Image 1: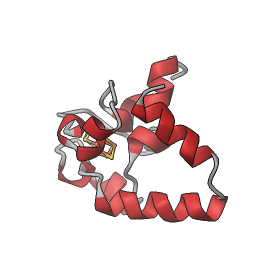
Image 2: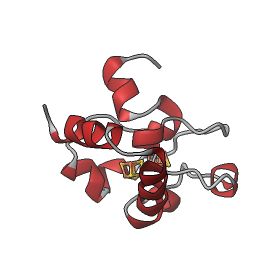
Image 3: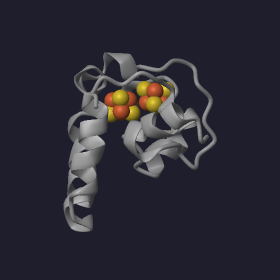
Image 4: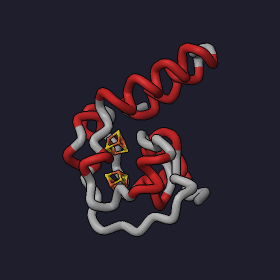
Length: 98
Ligand code: SF4
Ligand code: SF4
């Protein structure tokens, strides 16, 4: 089990409230998507972020560049994929269900 799978397991043990709080906190604290050139106005207005966990945005997204590999969470949790806002979460891309 790698770090990302450990995180998913920990998250699955949390209550809905704990999970919601954690997601909102990490959206602001760790996610650097808002500085990415692919992050558009619609995504910002929807307050979308943390796509590696939450999956694709409902907004139309065009990948100009992906900064995920520069994000501290990316290295810490041994992620392997990118462009999560358009291609789906790390879990989805690993299991190719997108
Ligand atoms: S890896 Fe990408 S989507 Fe995930 S928190 Fe970092 S910047 Fe956001
Ligand atoms: S997931 Fe990657 S491409 Fe999408 S907004 Fe975040 S850093 Fe940019």
